[in-house]
Figure 1: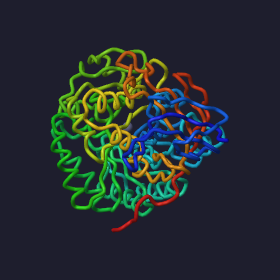
Figure 2: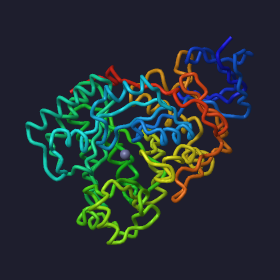
Figure 3: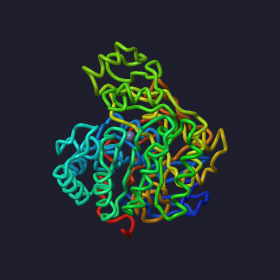
Figure 4: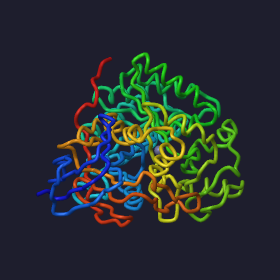
Length: 455
Ligand SMILES: [Zn+2]
């Protein structure tokens, strides 16, 4: 007798890229059996005509314990989120995980240690245009090592937020990630609207330190007519043995806070962003486009206000996500209800609808692999992202013909459709749009190297 059985599903195995019809039995939080035979459980769920696959792993997010965005992720079928991206994270990684271990969280969370905002601020290198001093750098090295000892899954660089970061600073901290076998997530610089140096820099981090590099939301920086060239840079590096991968959301429009240095007037100009292309998505001007008065007021008095830049070419999203080392991601943040970017509620359903159902960009098995096994392998999660006996029972049951996003600008938190059930660590967390369990997610402390340190 199993705790839960899911019967008659179309089972997608992302390791073998196969689909079979069958039943899954869950016991003690793990997948206990996968069979065509009849099995019995304390609770039974019918998955006739539905896809059953590992829960989605969102490799690029900023939930950082935010309940509301955690719930919006669960509603998309995301069972594991990776926070602390873009150079912004909690500093005390142990306290972060301990809180989840004590109180639980709605989905599983892994966490990076963030350089460009968090570490720099902690050591007094808060000016984004200036390099850290040797003393500050030594202190950051200490904090990064401490974070890795406590289970951070990687180092995140948000070079667009601290363009003054020196090469020494970037390489020495990435070197530590390499030694610990952890990834370096790089939100590359935004120098001009046609720059490729910033991506070459990410390649060089991996080449020179031996760290595995995950380029964050590639479409945001290069989906402006440069995707062809960006993929060529990545392919050339990979052919030379550089371990570089990337993620992308399903939107070309990206969100960040208005106080960021990349909204200084000279950056706006070289990137070709006009005020009317920027939408406010939180606070008192939520829903308004920027005017010079609003821009000045928010930068002076409310720099944490989130805005969305309307830019990019939609086709380049699909071009990027077709790459064998591309992973879908949300770049979700921590928002209040009614605020934010539709990516917080729509990304993964939109990925399956666009990439598989509407555009035939990816077959279903490959689409599942990129959303499950590939991020699990990239991060070193050995018990997630796989449909196999003994794996954590993080599972999503969905209708491939019915899965669709409903969120949009102005309606950023509308729930998607087509997801029947989500199980996290063997517990039913979501059923037919209703949240059943808000404490099923576990903290994921990464303690082992993901790859061998070679240089
Ligand atoms: Zn981000």
